Length: 258
Image 1 (cartoon, rainbow, N blue to C red):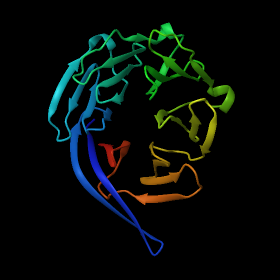
Image 2 (image 1 turned 90 degrees about the vertical axis):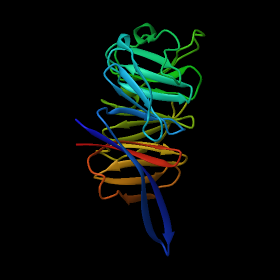
Image 3 (image 1 turned 90 degrees about the horizontal axis):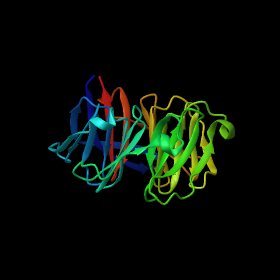
Image 4 (image 1 turned 180 degrees about the horizontal axis):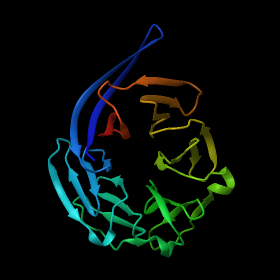
């Protein structure tokens, strides 16, 4: 299946209490991968099976690496411009790469961290830590991947929130956001629930500052994290079948499939 990654800037203004929206396309990029991420410099990372590639903001290939030992790559997280985290659900491994896509050290076997069946991971802003959803008993773990063996946080999502499934997990500005079929849960880093936004059938979401963005019914919604106000924004006419999106440096990156 072919995918298209489109980068767009959104301009919103409010005149006489009427909302006006303008989208400006910056670029588009065709890819066969649906595993991707963007760093703060606009570099693009795509993974297909055991191969990861890095392109610059203009689409030029910078590096390509095949890491057969990790198996199929399930997720790419960007810690910073010098450190990338890969997750393989197939092999239950977390691996660290530098900015040339070279392995920095031995991969972490999550089975050795008492994780039975890791399904979803998300990089943490805390050094050497990552969030992991264990699908065996639906628990959320904050793992210390260093050798210091610091205390690890665990939240029983099934017992506390009566959840049966988690679709996505991201950390933004020391706060954690979890997407379930029933909506988005907002936690602090201590595991305390701050908000629950009850919205079903969300395609994807991201958080910037105090604003939550999500796609539903081919519209982009902007929800304040502090107030009940919510905006419904029309997407560009050519943006159909959006499967995922991210907001990096004020730019929206939408991936479509077809």
